[in-house]
Length: 607
Ligand SMILES: [Zn+2]
Image (cartoon, rainbow, N blue to C red):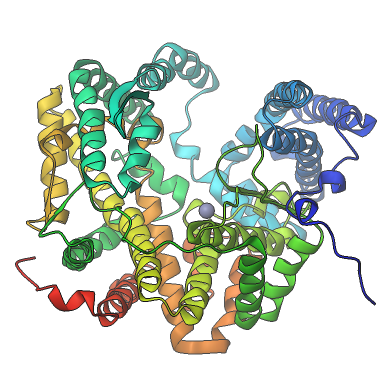
């Protein structure tokens, strides 16, 4: 049967009616009120009843109720977030989001006791519960909560920490955001004096104009340097604050808590980081190649992400969509089928509109709802890759809908698995089709630079952070001393191949991960290397790789990264697991080199 063609504008806009018929639908209010009401009843029923005293079947009932209340409460809130992302200027959407947020907070506070009770569940009780087969589904969640038991303080102490944080840690974080957010940078762009924001300045690192890239980066860093007294004070206070709290709670090292949250052993992280360091020369080989492709004798660190001349390509949404569908289907029919459903049922919003959120995301919602994708499709290569990336996330969450809410979200370190994999599939499909040499080079460079930013650079950031925490044990760190530590770690990566701008000394002071979530950066390395290793395995094993991969995605967050990868026969505690990922980088660089003729003028020097 022939279906009538949909107008292209409609095809590019998502259809949220699977959630609610519209922002005024009565079901929104009834979900908001109903879930909060149920949360209150849940609290009344279980708060004073010792969770420990429940029979296993009652405990199962409580877990299921908890999940169902959370799902019901999340739905209107997430719907409002999607509307707001669609048009932030719409006042109706804005107030609906505000209402959704407030209700969600209220609901979370009502059921917070339950999560604390799960953390405090005595070992013997947990074992009893787990011996009851229907509770097996919650094994991982219960083990996860339990892990924090030894580091949880008495209720009053927890409350004191929480309240004091408002004028302590949280206040410093807010100060950082407000202080640096108010920075404006004067810069001459195309003969015109302008005042730019921080993110506008950093986006100029992707400008084809070398002088502009350098001036923008220098001005940006210099301004941070001029404010280093405040920025260093914030950094010092936060490190000390974490240490004091860690000592109270009994964590053994500054990274201990992060490792528990990520469910990764310290030895594994150290192994991964050490191996990444041993591959720094691979990054330097690329930097040298990139200098050559740009026709420069040597890169400055403001040149690393510079675009190649002549690498621009237009690609319409329709072309990107059919390329994606073909390549995903070739990988596995299920991948193609799910991606097709996203387009067919309009779960994707790719149109550029005023008031719409400027980035890209996949909103996972809950297991009972399908995900939605948002991006701004302008029609270049980068957008086509973003589409594949977000579609990867979409497929991951779609497959994980088999899980219940507590097992739904994949662990942080595996959350980019399908997205980066989807991008790799798309890059290979684009390379296969593309005859133009410069565009092929651009594609390969984009892929390699992504890896440099998520693996090598994050390794430098984490090493720097480790050193800073270590030093701060001994004394307060002056801005210049922090700058020295930063410089040394960056020098290990760049070597003599890339010249760092002198102002780069202040490069540590604008990284918000250091402020908001310490040691977060290593999860990027972990996640990216896992995908590269999986991709390498796919190239080696071919089709037989795919069923296990699908199973990994279907598992959502029902296990730790160790467990989930272990089921695929992979062991993150072995050096060859991590080394395998670097083979992909090696191959990408070799492929780029083989594209000549530009590379013929590239000579290999001291790396
Ligand atoms: Zn992503």
